[in-house]
Length: 80
Image (cartoon, rainbow, N blue to C red; front, side, top):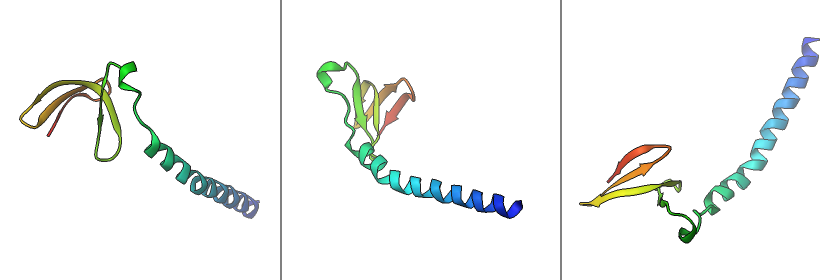
């Protein structure tokens, strides 16, 4: 009984690993291709990080190469 369970669990694990490897390139491509909405339709400010991620919020201050950015999800940020 234990050997039968071990074979099933290994088979399931192999299927899951294969699925992850097959989906990874598609997920990576989708993440790189995403762009924020057209600015004319959106009153928010968009900030792209070095990692490629986009932040939505409002620029509240820009002075001396520092920017204060207010984001709903991350609250107030000071970006150098």
